[in-house]
Amino acid sequence: MKKILKILIGSFKINIILLLFFNILTNLLIILIPYINGRFLNALIQIENIKKIQLFGILLIFCLIISGVSDIIYSYIYSITNEKLQFTLKFKIINKLRKIPYIEFKRFDTSYLYQRIEQDTITCCDFILSNIFTSFINLFKLLIILILIFNINIYLFIYTVCILPIYFAIFSLFKKPLKDKNFEIREMQNKYYSTMNEQFTYMYNIKINSEYGNENKKMTSFFSRYIKSFKGYIGLISIFSLSQNSIALIFQIITIIIGIYFIIKKQMTVGSLVVVSSYFNITENTIKYYYNLAGDYITFKVADKRNDELLNFEEEQNGKKLISEVYNLQGNITYGYDKKLFKDLKIDLQLSDILYIIGENGCGKTTLIQILNGIINDKNILLKINGVNYTDIDMLGLRKNSISNVPQKIYMLDGKVRDYLKNTDIKEDFILNFFRLNEDKDVRNLSGGDLQFLMLVNKLFAKKQLVILDEPTSNLDVSRKLWLKEYIKRTRKGRIYVIVTHNKDEIIENSKIIYLRKENIYEKKNY
Image (cartoon, rainbow, N blue to C red; front, side, top):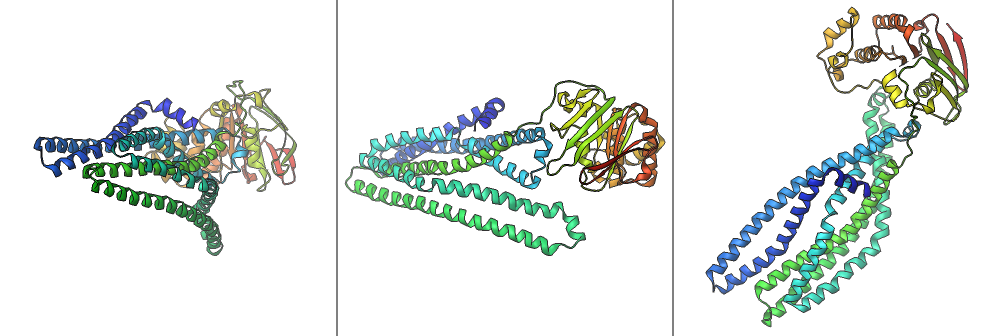
C-alpha cells in the first residue's frame, strides 16, 4: 500500500486534490438532498406557503444538477488517474524485473507473469484510489446522519446503532475463508490464462504437428481445475452476499414499521419519514461499503503481497567501473544451474580474434553468450574484460556502449527501415540497394530474412569493439551470407567477434573454435 500512496503523492497531487474536493462535494449533497426533499414534500402537503415550495423546489433542482455534474467530473478524473496509476505501477514492476538476474527471470512463465501483473495491478490501484478518501468521508457522513436521525426520532436512532454490530459480526465468520479462496482463485486463474495463451504462442508448432487432441485435453484439464476453484469461491461469495442482503431487508422492513407507527401517533411528518428512510438507505449503503471494504481489503492484500514478491526480488549485481571499449576478454568458466554445462572452460580473446561456438542443441551455446555478456554471473565464473573482473564493471553501460548483440530471435521496436539506418554511414551498394527498396517499410512487415539482415546492418555498423552474433545467418540467403562473411573479414582488425554457428563453411580462416557437447565436454581448435 505504501508504494502506491507514494506514487500518488509524488506524481498525482493535483488529481488527488480534485478527487478529494469532488468526493466531499458529492457526499455533502447526498446528505443535503434528502433533507431538502423532505422539507419540499412537507411544504407540498401543507400548501401553506408558495414561496417555501418554490424555494425548496429550486434548491432541490440545483442540488441535483450539481450532484450530477460532480459525479461526471469525479468519474472522469478518477478514470484518467487510475489508468496512469496502473501504468506507473506496472512500469515499476517491469523495470524491477529487468534488473533481476536473468536466470531467475527465466523461471517465470511469461504468460502467467503478464496476467498476474495485469490483474494484481488493477486490483491494487482500484482499491487504493476508491478508498483513499471514501473510507474516512463515509465514516464522517455516517456520524452526521446518525446525529440527524437522533434529532428526528431517538428510537430509530437506537435501532440503527444496534443493527451496526450485526454486519461486522457476520463478516468475521467469512474473513479467513474469503482470503484463502481469493488467493487460490487468483493463482488458478493466472495458470489457466497462461495455458490459453500458449495456444497462440505455439500455434505454428501445434498446426504442423496436428497436436489438437493433446492440446484440447490440456486446456480442458486446466479449465476443470480452474472452474472447480471458481465454483468454491463464487459459492462462498453467494453465501456472504445472502447474509448481507438478508440483514438489509430486515433492516428496511422494521424501519418502515417504526416510521408508520410514529406517523399514526402524529410524532413524525411524512416528509420526516421520507428523510429518515433516505438516511436509512444511505446508512445501509455506508455499512455495506465498510462490510464490503473488509472483503475488498483481503483481495487487495493478496494482490499487494504478490506485487511485493516481484518488487522484492534481489537485483543482479552491477559493478561501478566504467569501460569505454573492449580490447581483451579472458575467462575461466565453470557454470551450470540445473546441471554443470562448463567446467574450467578457458576463453582468451584479443582484438582481431574471431571465436566460433559450435555445438548441438542444449549444450550451452546461448548460455555461454549470456555469460560473455555479463547477463549470467556466478562465483565460479572468472571473467575479465581488459584485465578487470566483470563483477566490478558497469556491465549495463558496457553492453549499451561497447557490445553489439544480434540474438537468434530478432526483436525490433516499431518503426520504418530508414529509422534503423539513418545514423549509419552506409556506402556499400549491397546495403544501399536494400535500403532503397525497403526504406519506407515498417519493420513488422519485413520477412524473416530482411529483418535479420536489417538487425545485422544496424548492429555491425554501430562501431562497437565486441560483436556477438547468435546464428546470424539462419534466415539469410546465399548472397547475404557471403556479404556477412566478407564484412567480418574486413572489419575484424579492430574488433572481437563471437559467433554461434552450425555451418562450418562460414568459418573464416585464422579463427578460434570451441566445440561444445553435452556433459561439459568441449574441444578448442584454431582454424
